[in-house]
Amino acid sequence: MGNTQIDQNLSAALYMLGFNFLDGDSGEIAEIKGNMTIKLVHQSGEELKFVVELPGEKQMTFSVDRYQIVGLAEC
Image (cartoon, rainbow, N blue to C red; front, side, top):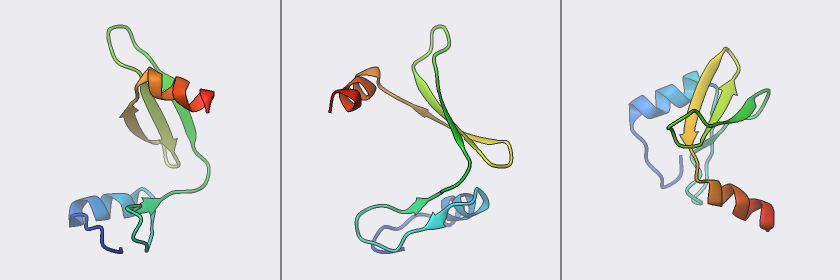
């Protein structure tokens, strides 16, 4: 796993979710490729979130800054 170390619990969880571990020094740890859906969700009173739907009806949720999205579109 290169120079980046992660604990055994995170390593096991990533493996169970279908991630492949990367062997590099760029700080990238793991990746997943395949069929997935990414949704932008904004529920009343909450922050914006990306919901990544993984195979096997699993989800990962990430908070996202609206300015980051706008910035990406402007590049």
